[in-house]
Image (cartoon, rainbow, N blue to C red; front, side):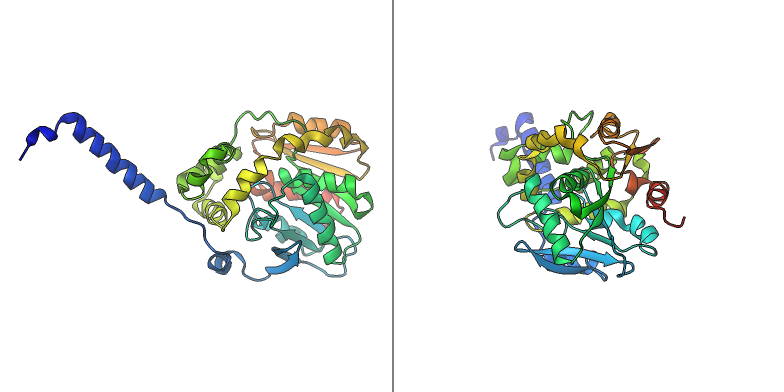
Length: 319
C-alpha cells in the first residue's frame, strides 16, 4: 500500500470535501407541492379562488354586511399568516380579507412571471371585483404597503382609507438587508438557492427584520421556511427583485394621495428606516404617523397588540 497518498494536505482536503457534502445534504431543500403544505398552512377558513390564472390562497373573516372591508397585504417573502393577530382583533367588528400575493405563500408564482407594481395593483383591482367589493380599507406592510398606496393612486374610488406599515415607496437605501434577500438578488446563484435552503438562513433573515430578535420563535421560523419552499417561490423572489429599481418610480406622486392615511413604523427598522415614515407623513396631507420604539420592519407581527390599537383608533372601532 502506498502510504504517501495520505499526506496532511490530502487528509485536510478530504475532510473539507466531507464537510461540504454533509452541509449540502443537511441544507438540501427541494420545492414542496402546494398539496404537501395545505394541511398545515391552509386550514379553515382558508380557501382558494381563481384569479389571473392563479389559485389564490385567501381568508375572508368577519361580518359579511361590512360595506367597506379591510384588506391586509403582506410584504416580500411573507404570507397572509403575518396578520393573524390583527385579524383576531379586527374581525369581530369588521370584515377582514387577507391573501397570499402572487409569488408568495401558497398562491405561488404568477404564470407570466410579472411582479411589477402595475401587475400587483391590477391584481388588487381584480380581487375587489371578484369579491364584489366596491370600496375597501387597504393596509399593507413593506411591499404590501407599496401595493396599497399605488392601488389607491391607480383606483382612487376603490380605496376609502390607507394603513401603511413600514411601506415601500421611496428609493431604498437599507441599513441592513436579510441574507435571504441579498442572495436572491444574485441571479447566477439561482440554480443553487432554488435547491438548497438552510433553515438557519431563514432564522437569521427573520431576526434581521425584528427590532427584538429574541421574539423570533421556532414556530415563526418554521412558517417562513416552509412557505418559502412552496414550489416556484424561490424563483419568483429572484424575479421579483428585478423590479425593485422601478418600484420607487412613482414616489413623486405620493403627495397626490387623498385618502385618510395612518402610517405605522418600527423605530428599529433597518430595511426601510423610519425616515421613510416621516417622508410619507410629510407628503400625504393630514396623515397620521405613529412610530413604535424598539420594533423593526414587521411591527404588526412583533407587537400586534400595540400596533392594532392604533388601527382601531384610526378606524373608530371598539377597543
